[in-house]
Image 1 (cartoon, rainbow, N blue to C red):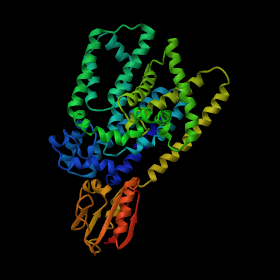
Image 2 (image 1 turned 60 degrees about the vertical axis):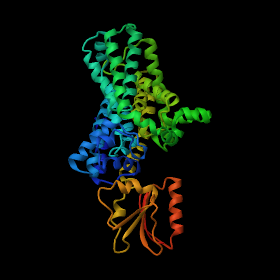
Image 3 (image 1 turned 120 degrees about the horizontal axis):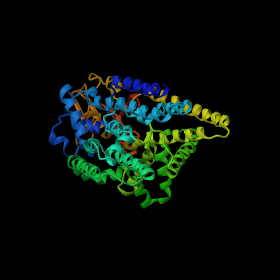
Image 4 (image 1 turned 90 degrees about the horizontal axis):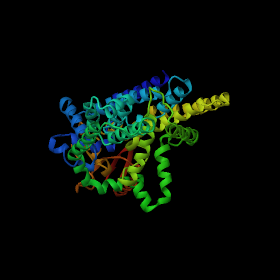
Amino acid sequence: MLVWTAAAALAAAACYRYFQQPTFWLDEAFVAVSLRSPSLQVIFAPLEYGQIFPRIYLAAIAILREAFGYRIWSLRLLPFLCFIVGTFLWAHLLVRRSRPRAVPGFLAAALLIGATFWLDQAIQLKQYTFDVMLALVPFLIDDAFFDETLVSGKRKARLIAIALPCFLSYTYPFALGARVVGWYGQQARRSGWRLNKTAVLVLGVSVPGALAVLWLTDHRFNIKDTAAYLAYWNDCILAACLRHNAAAAPRLIAKFLWGWHGRQPLVTALLVPLQALGVYSVIRRLKRREKNDPSWGSRSLGSLVLLIGVVLASALVNYPICAGRTVLFTQIHVQVLAIEGALLLLAGQRRQRAVLIVLWLVIAVVWFHSVGAYVRLVRTEPAENLRPVLSLIQAEEADAVLVHPCSVAQVRSLPDPLPVSRVVLATEQTRPQPGERTWVLWTHLGNEDCVKELDQLRERSRSWQVVNVGSGCGLALAEF
């Protein structure tokens, strides 16, 4: 029950943020500009600003945009709904692994309420909530499904059904592959390597077929932006790390596995031993051919395979693995391993009272930090929200707005025009005329180049009056 309460709390926070309707932050704006006048020629082509986004999912968002108009709420509707569904699927898996014991249930709830990276993506016009939701689906499937289809050869059409989402999402193939490998590893240890050849052929053709569609709709366009992609994610790619600074590779892997807790070293220090015990428990059961909980099956082995697979993908095919939005679909699997570690300790016969005391202390610390992180995120002003700033622009004071170069996409993505007659995008050749009073609008000062550009604008002005400074954005009234 507590896990479901945590899921409801995440959903409530997402609803609160969604109905606030903050403007698009920079990464969302890059996507939104492609939806101002969407068409097949726009969507199934290289996207503006070099965005890498699942095109069929983008087309679904474009359909909503056409149905309801270009509004912030309509563009974010599908990502928001994916977050709500994904959160409750996430909770469902945690409940299945932790029940019926109270201790792992409390731990699972604490880990879920503390999943602030996930909550941060709740309403964003990005693919990550969709990716996480789809990547949970293979782990909702019981081992009996694979026994029936891949071993007994029955209902093989269902194998096609689970392969098809591979053409919708960049992360689903990781999850499906890990789930199948995890199941087969356990199946082979207990019952032998025998599989139905026709069923394997069906799955072996369906998955590459779906990936071929993904290539045609997405990757043949994305590959044109490979250089920019690698430059942007260079510090998060293990292959680049191994080439340029191999000593930093362990830190990158550690960030992938344990960066979810942010600046909470105590939480990390307490969870790492539990996760290590969880890995030990999974491998021990596999080696000893021990029977898993029938309702859970080989899912934990699949979780371990997935984490290893993503690290290998970063080393071999340049997949970014900094703990964050690109690997959000793996966070639940790190949590599953922590729960496995707690279950292993509870299964021991010695010093049960001491074990319980230690586990409850760990859970108390995780709860304290998780609730604190949740409350801070809910209270925080949405990043780069221009609404408070836009309300301060008065044409009577100055009838022009100079948009900072780093903010151009965000202004272009606004549903309504700015309340002035002249908008100067700083990427254009046009500059404010000498003696002209103008509003200066900026965002994204987390980037050093953006800070320098703002400093240069300020230096060129004769007067500079800061009107508002918000969460990652600001407004000044200047004369040049």
